[in-house]
Length: 230
Image 1: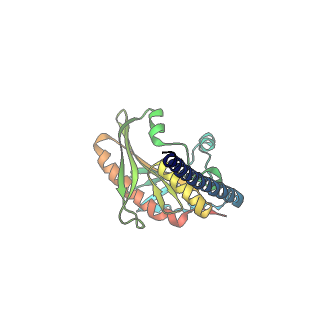
Image 2: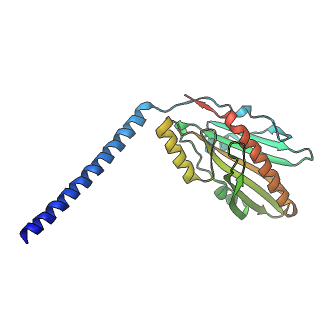
């Protein structure tokens, strides 16, 4: 009986030691990886590029606009693009892009789902939709919101983008993508992209279609105008 107990305890001890050394090895590798990433230093934005996005997109002419300095201070991005694009029949789409370099963590803390209700808009619909830019022929999910304030409706399409062509619909996926970029390429920059269009209730469906078409145009352009970090 004693030999059986001793054998059992010895086996358990060996298993425990084996697990301990595996855990220790993982911890050591993680620590070394963290030290290596820190030692590389963070790259800085040397060329923003986004301001060179074409002023003509899908036949719509762009007009530059600017928020107040207090808004830009709160957003704290490395680069902003804020434009109104006009269709030939006078409809207006608003484009905002906020780019955050690696040193600023690659993403904004702002989210339209939280911001719109704070501005008095009632959220009517929130879902992911699939768009098909040229580099994602199978489609990529982005966010669609429909909100209203009185008789005015606003259609919003937004997403997060990293490494030029990496499009992510939510913050969790964006954080994973940024982490992988930091480990593999010492870079975790990213952008928040938002397209909005106002309409009345009867025209909300047409507004959504127009916003989707314009969003695909912006998705196709962004990789060629992605900021440079060194």
